[in-house]
Amino acid sequence: MSTSELTLNEAMESINGFDEIAIEKHMGYDIYTSDEEGSGVYREKPVLMIRCLIFVMQRRTGQTDVEARRAVMEMTVKDVHDYFADDPEDLDPDDPDSESGKDEPQHDVEHTSSPLSASSPE
Picture 1 (cartoon, one colour):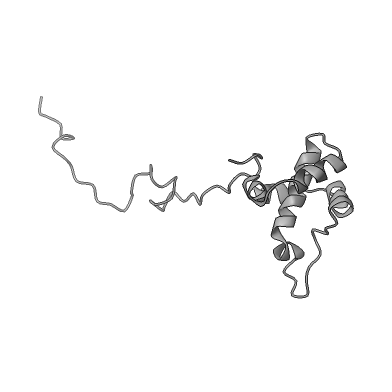
Picture 2 (cartoon, rainbow, N blue to C red; picture 1 turned 45 degrees about the vertical axis):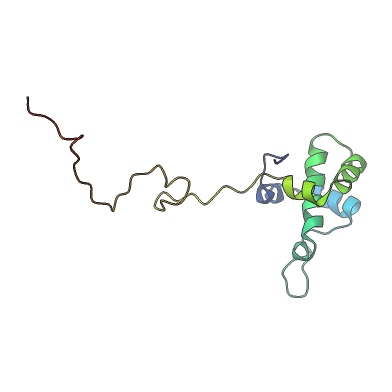
C-alpha cells in the first residue's frame, strides 16, 4: 500500500528549486547530474533518487529538513519502493484487455439478434 497519493513521476514533476537545493544540501544528491552517457545519475542510484523524492514529500508535511532526512534514511528498501502510488494502467478503450476496454462494447463484432431481444408481435 502506498503512502503517497502521487505517483513517482508526479512527485518528480512537482520538484521546485527550493526542493532541489534541499536535496543537494541534505541528501548529497544532484538529481539533474548526468553521467558520461547522459542517462542521468538517477539511473545509477534509483533507490537514492526515490529517497530524495520522499524527503521532499516529508518536508511538505511540515517536517524539518533534518527530520525528513532521518525519516527517509531509516526507511527499508521495501518501504521506499511502496511509498508512491502505482502508475495507472494503460487505459485504452479500443483494447478489450485494458481496464477501460473491458466495459466497452466491441464495435468490430457483428451483433446477431437473440430470441430474448426479439420483440413479440402485439
